[in-house]
Length: 202
Ligand code: SF4
Image (cartoon, rainbow, N blue to C red; front, side, top):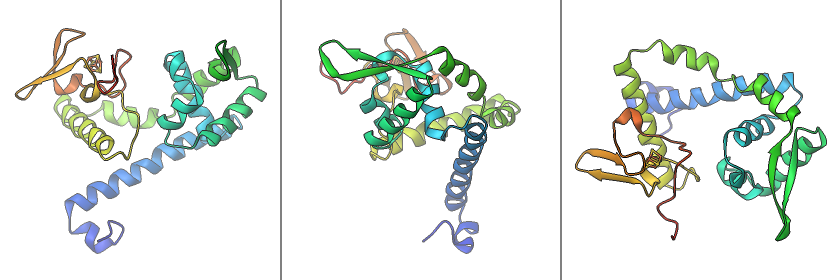
C-alpha cells in the first residue's frame, strides 16, 4: 500500500500524515537550496557550517558529521575539501594522530552561517502563530517520531533526553537528573548540549 497512491492516501489519515511529512521534507530542501545557490555552495556544505558553529569541537570530525547527516565519510570529506579551499573552515590536527582532525570555522565561514541559518524562517513564522496547546501537541508527536525512527536505526545520532544518561522516568513523568527538574513534554530536547549517551561506558 503506497502513500503516494491518491486513493490509499486520501482514504487513510495515517497515509495523509506521512504524505504531509514527506511534502514538508521537500520544503526544507527547497529553502536550503535557495541559500545554497546564493552562496555557490551545496546544501550539505551549508548544513556542515551551521552544525559546526553550533556544536562542540569533538563533534566536528568527519566520522561524527557523516553519522549526523546520514551520509558517507567520503561525502563529508569532499564537502570539507571544498569549504577549506573557499577558506570557510580550517582543520585542527590531532597531535597524537596526525590523520585525525577536527574542523573549525573561519571568520568567512561564520559570516556564511549568519547569512544562511535563517533558511527555516518561513516555517518558524507559521509555527509561531499556533496556540501553545497546539505547539505542545506538535512537539510531542515530532519528538516521539524522531525517537521512534532512531530506535529503528533509521536516523543515527540523536542527542535526545530519551537516550541520555541523565534522563529518568517515573510512571508517565520525565526527569533530568543533571538539570534537577521535571521535564514536561515541551522540555524534552532533541539536541541538548549537556547530552551524555547512556549507552556509553563510563
Ligand atoms: S541533560 Fe539534556 S538531554 Fe539529558 S536529560 Fe537533561 S535535558 Fe535531556
